[in-house]
Length: 335
Ligand code: IPM
Ligand code: MN
Image (cartoon, rainbow, N blue to C red; front, top):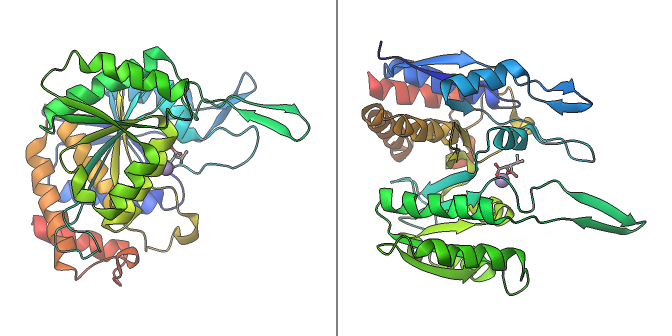
């Protein structure tokens, strides 16, 4: 019937307001998406907190979910639901593009980076011990299987977006075994993609060069272990105007979850202040993933035109507009 059903997780903090904005804009654009709302309020099962079965079923059935930010409690015994979702569905690749908004002034012009983050292991394995009082270990787990999977995806992705250059970012000079394995697997995988240029770069050097001249990365797809990807993607966001603007896609073999790079921002929640652009751009990645490019193009243009005009910017971008006013400005361009 030409309808596509997507699981919808509105999220915590600013989640509900930015999710509402996405829904309203999709409705105005007549995008053929049916939203199936899933509740991911954690439940206790076999002594562990986990996601309700209903939500898992919904995502498995629809293959695609759009999710708002979920609050991450700090401290022992709490696992972030964001991570639980990534793990539950084996969403092994986290794709984080970061592009300058035309017309929005920052110290950098024409930033256009794509970062792919290994999304299931590394420093996020959750394996931690207290060895003796005052001595602790957090294990960085790297496996051939997960590394090869994300690297292969990276090369294929590079081909698909026509940036035929993979650069693996690492610190194998220090993390000799874990990053060393990641890099050596990358070298092997690269042999299967002779049309894609391949090289490596030390993480600290990447950071230095990125904030000096991000244009050096315009034709490269960066692939890196989990925590580096977490950090470098926030740094990239800083180049273009902050976390209000950067989307992401969590890709797995069976399903994919699209979400903003930012968190739930409880400090501004419920005040109609949040910038919904990052979630909106994530939903554009979702539309493209679903083959609905026409709608993605139309809505993206309305978003970019609104940002470029600069009349209805939210506070994070130096404007005075509320979430609602910004959303309505985009909607008016769709009508
Ligand atoms: C991100 C976030 C998450 C992460 C948090 C919320 C667990 O910062 O998606 O980058 O660390 O991966
Ligand atoms: Mn992060």
